[in-house]
Length: 294
Image 1 (tube, rainbow, N blue to C red):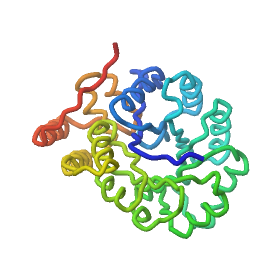
Image 2 (image 1 turned 45 degrees about the horizontal axis):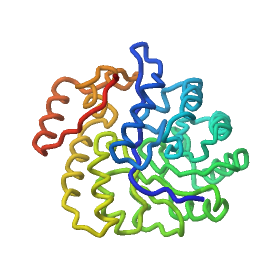
Image 3 (image 1 turned 45 degrees about the vertical axis):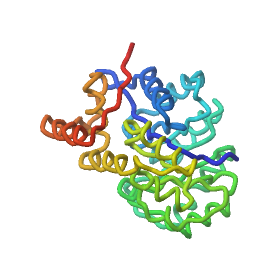
C-alpha cells in the first residue's frame, strides 16, 4: 500500500452546452493540473459535480481515463448516496485497474459512527481490492467523523482504509496513524498540517493554485523558508467568499466559455461577484495561465 502524499486537486468536470459530460476536456483539465504541479487529482468529488452527474457518464469517463498518461495519479470519487451504486461503480473502476477511491458517507440521513462503520464494511466486503480515502465533510453529508470511528475503521481494514480528506477540520490536527494519509481540504491548512505530520491536501482551489501550492509543499519538504504561504492562504480566502464551484468555473470561463456550463442548481457567479473576485485576486497579484481547448 502506497501512502498518498502531496498536492491533490479536487478536479472540475467540464460540460457541453447540453450539460452532458465532456469527457475529453474533463480529462485534459486534470492532466493540465498535474503538469502545473499537482501530484494527482480526484475525479468526481463535490467540486466535480459528482452528485449531479449520471452513473453512465462516470463509467464512460473511467473507460477513457485508462489511456491517460497520468492514470496512476488519479483518485476516483463516487458521489453516490446508494450503497449498491457505489459498489457497482467501484467494481467497474477496479476492473480498469483504478483502486484508490475518495468516498463520503451518504448525505441527508442522520446516523452515528457505528452506522458509518457498517457502510464502509459493506463496501470493503464487496470490493476488497479497494483503497479508500474517507471523505470528512459534515457540511455536505451531515456527518462528521470522530477520531474513534477512524481508528476503528483502520483497525478493521488496515489494507483498505488508507487515509482521510478532512474538510471538517476536526481530526487532522490530532489523528496519528502510521502509514496513513491525512489530507486537509484547504490550502490554508497545508503548511500547518505538514508541520503536524499530515501528508498534503486535497482541495477545490488547487484547480487554480496548483503551482503555488506545490511550491509551498516543496519548500517545506526541502526545509526552505516558506515565503509564499501567506499568498496561498489569501487566494484561498478570496475564493471562499463564494460557492467554490461557482467561483472556479467563473474564473476559468474568462478564457474558455465551456466552464460556464454547470448542472442546476449550480451556476456561475453573477456579474458583481465575478468582478469582485477578479478585483480581489488582482490585489494579491495572482494570475494563473489557463489552458484552453486547442
